[in-house]
Amino acid sequence: GLRDITKKTKPGSTVILDGNTGRVTINPTAKQIERYQKEQKKFFSYKKRLETARDLPAQTMDGREVELAVNIAGPEEIDVALENGAEGVGLYRTEYLYMNRTTLPTEEEQLKAYKVVAQKANPYTVIIRTLDLGGDKFISHFPVPQEINPFMGWRAIRLCLEKVDIFKVQLRAILRASHFGKVKVMYPMISGVEEVRKANKILLEVKKELREKKIPFAEDIDVGAMIEIPSAAITADLIAKEVDFFSLGTNDLIQYTLAVDRVNEKVAYLYQPTHPTILRLIDNVIRFAHRQNIWVGACGEMSSDPLFVLILLGLGVDEFSVSPSSLLEIKKIIRGIRWDETEEIVSKLLKLSTSSQTRHFAQRRLSKKIKKILEEE
Image (cartoon, rainbow, N blue to C red; front, side, top):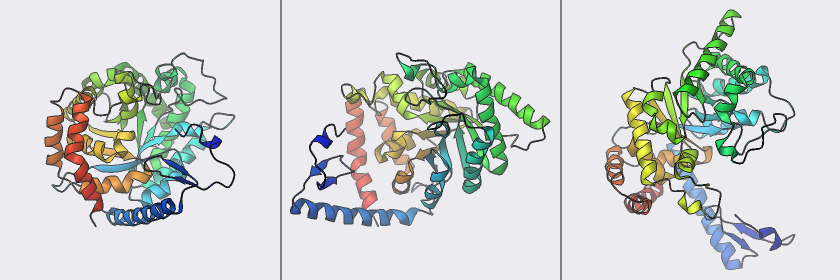
């Protein structure tokens, strides 16, 4: 972080913030200002080059096509995402509808927020993740007990399965929104088959209630599970029989598997997306899913990083959900490489023993290629 930056600046100070490196220059020299102005021009030129791929499919040079969707936290983000060429919403973070307010959102409020996104994204899909409160996301009007380790406590699907009345309100709104576009529902922080079955049972109850009231919804709405807990990754073959798709929540999957807090500076170096354990877990999840004929998406920071995207592509990920600002860059990367090349690289990565070996091998094989792809007109 920037730590004590405010103590080192005064009102009126000139500051340059390098968004690529996170470096801050206070009261830069004329030479430094000139250098960064040149960098800025190069960046604008680079963004213009990326826009040439906006309306093209996310397809590798040898014909492997994947879906490229975006993560959003509310309806206000969908327009920009679609303008950048998003093929739908891969992760709608609904917890933000519950935050910064004094009451729980009503069914009608939620329906309005989901409906507008479904309509605007149509004919593309919108994947709505059910409430993922807890961990680092809390709301004042819904007291969550203080826990020593909230990230592994009463949160997400665990909270919803206990507070069924709140869960049902959200599921009703999601189902009703499915009448206006291609909507899918996804459960967060699944640890095993039991939770999926319990959630699906409640979903069936809500469907029955809507049917009885003659309220339209998509009867065949797809249901997915986020794979972000090691137990879910290990039993993905069993969970795959209960759902229509998986989404790899890579941020939490890495944290929980490696027992590392990625925002703790003392241990952040242990947060390694290319750790052999992570690569093998993801490989197994995708194999189990494809064997069951369901597709696998990926969200989280790995999906917005060119290097990790190519590794996930080689592992067989079918859909990427990225930040809107990363979308065009990721699309250009995918379009500039052969899928069989990423598969060959991944097959070698899976044979390596340490995270330093995997990281160095991936960088050696892919970094120059990524740079070349991004520099091409």
